[in-house]
Length: 368
Image 1 (cartoon, rainbow, N blue to C red):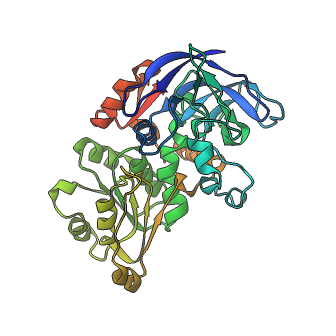
Image 2 (tube, rainbow, N blue to C red):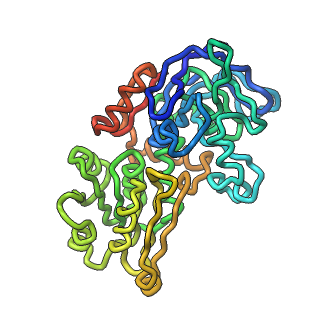
């Protein structure tokens, strides 16, 4: 079938809107009419080849839509089902069997390979040349996408419009999951979150939903600090106003129980160690600007104070569990993620990227 898609053809170049040919679903696959797709930082770092995926390719990995057709063997989904598309995983390796699909042994190939696990591509351009597909198991910067049955979550009946639900499949799941699953502090705890983008603000909302007593957001943009307060932050810090650890300890002299970094900036992650209370825990989820990025940590203080630091993929989450949980929290008024969203037509993807980089919107969602 003919579809419209945003194609990444050159490193750091604008996306091109093209008509492509999409194959019919194979065994185990579903065809989804994409209603909307969140624009994620990971899409941009892949376009810029910080995380390399073969080009040309259709990116997009926060899709939401309606099942149009199913391939042979698909039993859990049917045409007409409203769905959110998550990341791809094999479903049978030790991590997948332990409900940790973000650490699937085939994660990199299935999500960044630009093809099916067997190496085939489902897209061709007007000249008949292959175009990368199945990015994060979906390639949803398009009007239609193919996905495997196990990375599709049915959301029929959600209180939010379907067009708002796509970001739950990656960015929001990453921030919320890191708070719910990785850091997992009890009610009454304290947390500092660095970065007031969609991932960091999802961490703020998750901490509020879990009744943390003190939620501190560190963010340089004033409008995002104010949005953070609206979403549940009890305190906000402008990093330009001085040393973050000093500002944090003016609020919590003994330090903070948990820390979540969504920036991926090594210096920011390192600075958070100085914010932690005894036995404090730090998780970082942000993608760094370079594959060679490193952090340096103080060994003796970390040992003496019992501190722990962990990198986290996809919020340590099982999408089939966490996506419905976030939807339920939203319906109860405890995870108001819609306040972050601004929509753009798919054809205006390059404008949406510029606006997001300039801080003119928090979470851009592309409507197909």
